[in-house]
Image (cartoon, rainbow, N blue to C red):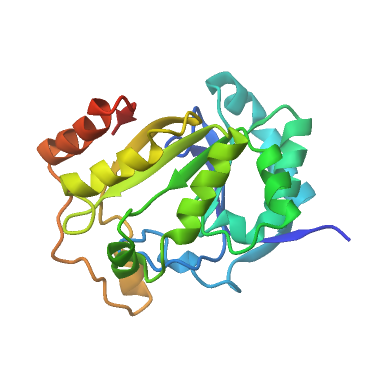
Length: 246
């Protein structure tokens, strides 16, 4: 019986979730509750639309000329793609058979290291790992869950030598301080599998989704970080010999 995935939406010409032009599959379901989440409507594990890999691949292949010409490929994002590891593993395996680059965009909240996790990673060319905050208390305040599973996943990627980009969202009052950036830089410095850190300035683009769902957006009083703040955070990583961009 073919594996079925539950997806929230598709984007055929994504340009910010991995190299080149990406066909992005936003998987349904997430266990983190990030206060700044711009995909609030992906949290429900039972929402979205069911789809099979062959159905999805027929769409992906139709865009292959654009993906290949730009050095792009397919990205599984979310929500949280690892919650549907079996489906994404099969999808990425199908992509690899077609010579299509694969990218996993994840918060690393892996509950159990079953063989399918490594099967997924075996067919993943690049991991975009979102580390929210190294301080666990602050992480819980921001996301309602501990950071321990994410940090364990980061170590697992390091042990595998898995090509990884770290993503760090700079949010006022949560992650825009120098000490938080230094803690992250110290954590990833020994990881020679990490190619760079992508610094993502907080934005309010998903605010309307919270309002549409009748929920209060918690960060109404928080503004996007200034260019000076972004430069200061970037310099923390540069000073430790880590490539950082925003």
